[in-house]
View 1 (cartoon, rainbow, N blue to C red):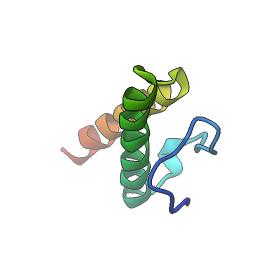
View 2 (cartoon, helix red, strand yellow):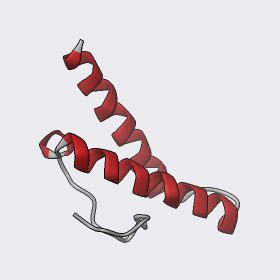
View 3 (cartoon, rainbow, N blue to C red):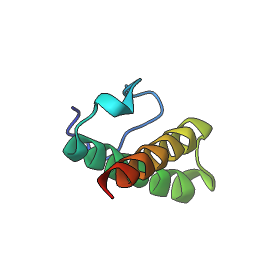
View 4 (spheres, rainbow, N blue to C red):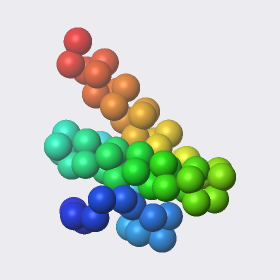
Length: 69
């Protein structure tokens, strides 16, 4: 797992989020959120890859929340 504070579109991203631990998923979410913030400030809009990753993370969190109920 990367210890960077953000995850650029060029950085590796897990193919299967189901295999990622809860803690590592939270780290990934933080990295992607920081990248989104940076892209909005620097470019005025997010990179599509960063948006897709953010969406995938949201879906995974939603699935995990359903299992925990």
